[in-house]
Image 1 (tube, rainbow, N blue to C red):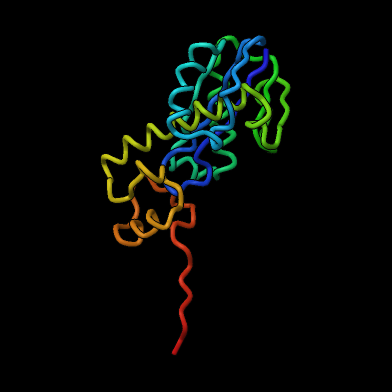
Image 2: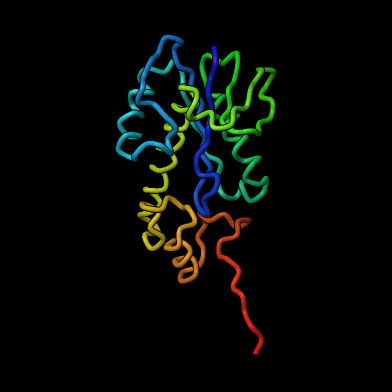
Amino acid sequence: MECGTDEAGRGCLAGPVTAAAVILPNNLKNSLINDSKALTEHKRLNLKPIIEDQATAFAFSHIWPEEIDTINILNASILAMHKAIEQLLPQPEFIIVDGNKFKPFKDIPFETIIKGDGKYLSIAAASIIAKTERDAYMNKIHEEFPMYNWKKNKGYPTKEHREAIKEYGITKYHRKSFKLLPDQLKLKL
C-alpha cells in the first residue's frame, strides 16, 4: 500500500505550508487528477470531494508561520508531510514524495520523485488536497486582513501583496524569516 505526498505554499510570504498524503486504490483510474498547479481552482475544488470519496485514506497538515520561522521552510514542508502521513489509516507500506528532499518517516521506505505530481496519481491527488485546504485557510484569514488580498494571491509574493506589506506592515500570519520586501537600492548623493 503506497501513499503519495505533496505540499502547497512553500514559496508564500504568509500563511501555513500545507501537506497532504493520499492512499488510492490500485485500480483507480481518473484522467482528470493532475498536478494541482496545472488545474484551475474550479477543477481542483471539483476533484477534491471525488479524491476524498475514492481514496483508501487521506489526510492533511498545516505547519504555521512561527514554526516555519523556527525550523525553516524545507524542514516545515517535510514535517507537514510526516504529520499528514501519520494520520493515515491504514499506514502506508511505501511513500512516494513530490520533489527531491525528504527525511525517513518511521521505518517506511520512500522515494523522492522530481515533478512527481505530474507522474503519479496519488501525489497529484495529494497536491490537490494540500492546495485546496491551504487556499481555504487563506480565504478565511483574508476576511481578517482583506488589504493583503489573500483571497486572490493566497500569500504568494505578488506585487500587490508586497505593496500591502509596505503600506500596512506585517501580520501574525506573515513568515518573518522570509524576505518580505525586496531590497531597495539607494544612491548616496
